[in-house]
Length: 240
Length: 153
Image (cartoon, rainbow over all chains, first blue to last red; front, side):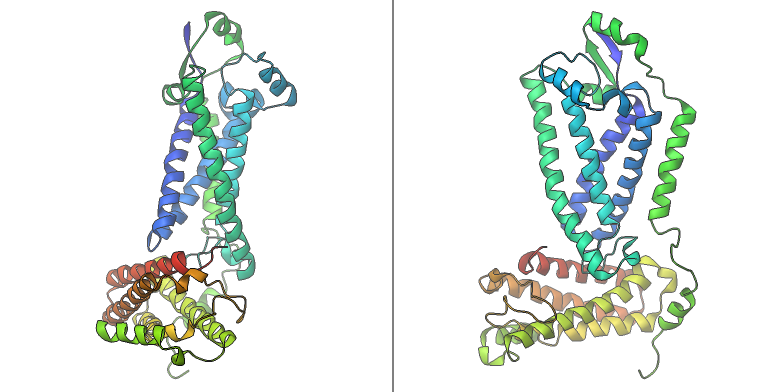
């Protein structure tokens, strides 16, 4: 057996920050009250994580790249026949990865336009009317249930790999390193690049921060002219 | 004060003669009440939480008083038997359980009432941080009732 690097540090950070953020988003939504504002902030943070992961799927190290693990039909067939021998996401796991990313994207995407009918509106909710915002809210609620099912499947699969297939998936996601048979390690070694390009990393971060900034309402997407009227309206006028 | 609120709520919840008009009308009135509430919570949210630099004491106090006025208006009268079905401005989302969970309903209604009155009291002082806290308590009470009695879409 040989220990080799599989997951680069940015990818691992992404993964665990996403875990923490999704749990925090869930809790803050359940608690409600003033915490709903944190729910919104956490949601924006998840937007950043997600955009980073997508960009990193093109600019990251070998096993972070979509083209390395994209679950094509032939890869899936090979996997089910027991012919798949790789060290990154296996094709079935890759399906799960893509499904989870899609669901999280649906969550944050709908959340941006949603409202809680109390005091919270997503940062982009003002771009749509209330009826539409309510529709986004319904999607936000219903897609969460699908996400929850996928997360449970994800965890069950990890336990299954651990107990039945004697394959520790959590360890490598923490350390980045994985024990693989020597022949396999030697076979894949030439095609693996585990180095994190600082420029690529910087570019990925810049892109994700820019997207978060744009959707957070930091850019006023509507004209800034009405501000003055709002200011005037935001005083109590005497009488009516 | 608290006693008075409770008595009002209980009266409203038990004496069927006190319900305000036909089912559709009760639903329409209460939908209007919550719609008006949301206008006022949005104002406070804007000036106290989202853009505190725009804080205007009188404006926020007026909104808080409006919320307290709605809370103190005896909304229980608008929840007569059978009003879990029907259409006001739009179909009601009141859960049927509302009528079985009287104790819990009384608790959340009472919490809203207390929180709304506290908000109005604090808003009069113009203490932004205190208003923010009191406002958080109000929105918490909104959610508690939504979770208990409102059909989730």
